[in-house]
Structures are given as structure tokens and as C-alpha cells.
Image 1 (cartoon, one colour):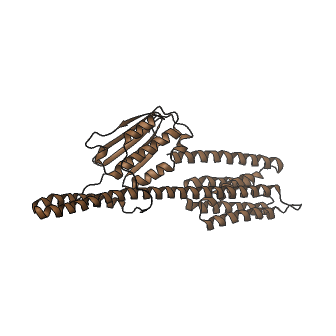
Image 2 (spheres, rainbow, N blue to C red; image 1 turned 90 degrees about the vertical axis):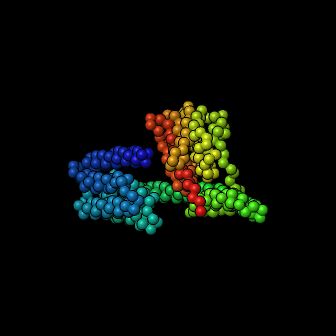
Length: 383
């Protein structure tokens, strides 16, 4: 929803910019060259600007075709301007549309196609200079405008490409760190169950020598520990392991977290399920994930929702699993959504999805922001 609003705003701004450039170019040519001389250049500019606006509606792999089509239209315009003695092309409006297409292609495409598009844009600038055949030596004003537009497109495209690469690298590092931390936690859970199995097996040997019938209770306990260990092991499949670094602490309580937040932020109302289905009955990896989701959501409220008067934290359990929802009542603003989906929530989403759950976040109805996570509870399967 937010991405769609951003695309609409971007398309609206570009449309206004294209129209302003087109009107300025048309008026200037009509006053200097005369009536109808503006029409061929305006038609080419409209076609290229339309292609530039269409890039929002296509995936990255289609941007090469859009940029290629725009460059082809511009090449035809340059050829016609030379053959029919029309004003030099590409004109300012056409150059603006091309700069959007070239910059977008450089940002989104793979290095080789992006380089080809950039080189074709530079060749078009040179071709426009050659087609102009100026009476005096030197670069024409139109060529200078086209060259500046090409340089701006390359510079902006490369800058955005580097920012995108950095964002992807950071996001991948966040995911990796979250996987490693969760893997360590699950490793500790399995190690705890195996240690219990070992102790009960030793006890069964001692008891079995005196009364073999009592050894059955120890064997049942070993079966239970083994089932819990197998369940936890299934949840660690697919996660990377890292045996270095300190082990994660035991499950932390939400009450203490809320009390600490109440001392520095808006009032938090915590609702938890009653015992015996409470937090203590859940597996450690579920408990720690619920805690971390709430902590990250409250941290975002403190950083980005200064107008919030209260926060509601609701933790519930149903047959499908555990659900945690954090909702604040801060008034919505134009800059708020862009700052609420940071790398912290990205790491939380990775952790939740690694456990088979889902996490959603976004603006609430009318005002506020919500974060909602659902975590399935593992079923015990004795072996």
C-alpha cells in the first residue's frame, strides 16, 4: 500500500515535470522557428516521456526494453531533424525523458545491459551533435543540455544502484545474524533435552538393578525429552549454525520490558493469556521471539512515534499458535511510514518466518502503527 502511494506520487511529479518541459520547449520553438516546427519534436518527447512513466508499472527486467525503445525514438527524431531541417534533437523534453529511462536502467539492470544502455545514451548525444552540423565549430547548446542530462542520469543511476546494493547487503546481514542467533537458542534447547535424557538414562540403570519395574518411569521421561528434542531439531533445519559467541540467555519476561518502557515512553497496556496457557508453557524459541518482536516494536514507537499517547501489547494463544500484536495511537504523518520499516523489523520477520510464522506491519486504521506476528506452536510427537 505504501509502495503504491509512493509510485503514484513519483509518477505524478514526473508527469508535471514532463509537461512543464514540453510546454517550454514548444513555446520556444514556435516563437523562434515558426508554427508547426514544434510538432515533430513534441511528438517524440511525448512518446519517450510516456515510456518513462510506464517504467513504474513494469519489473526491472523490462526496463531494458523501455530504455531501448526510448533511445530508438530519440534516434529517429535526430535523423528526421537532420533530413527535414527541423530544430535540433533531442530537445529538452525528450532529453529529460531519456535521462529518466537511462538512469532507471542503470540502477536496476545487470552491469552489462546497464553499460550498454549508458553507452547508447552517450552515442545519441554525439549523434545529435553530428546531425546539427553547426555553422561554427564547437558544441551546440542543445548538445550541451543533452550531455548534462546524460551525465545526471548516469550519476543518479549509479548512486541509487550503490545505495540499493548497500541496502541488500545490510538486509542480508540482518537476516544472517538473526538466523545465527535463533540457531544458537535452538541449539541450547536441544542440548538441555539431551542432558535430561542422559541423566534419566543413568538413573534408570541405577533403579533397574534394584527394581526393574520402576525403570519404566525413567524410560517414559527419556521418551518425552527425546520427542521435545526432535521437535526443536526440526525447527532448526535450514538455519545456519554458528558455535562461536555466547549462548543466548533464557526466556525473558514481557512484564519487565513493559515496565522499563513505561519509564521512558508512552503508557503501555499489556494483555497476556492466563496460566496455564501463558508464556511459561511455550517453547523457549517461541517465548524469546515474542519478546524480541515486542521489544523491536516498542523501540520503533520510541524512535518514530513521538506523538503516541499509549501503546497496546496483546499476546494471545489459540489452537493455531501464539499471536502478538503491538499497536500505538500516534497521529499519522507524511514522513512516518518511510521510517517505520527498518532493519530491526526485517530481522524480526526473518526470525518469525524461520519458525514457520508470519509478521505484518503497517499504518493502523485512521492513525497509529501496528506490528502483528503469528507463531505456530510445535506439536509433541513421541518416538
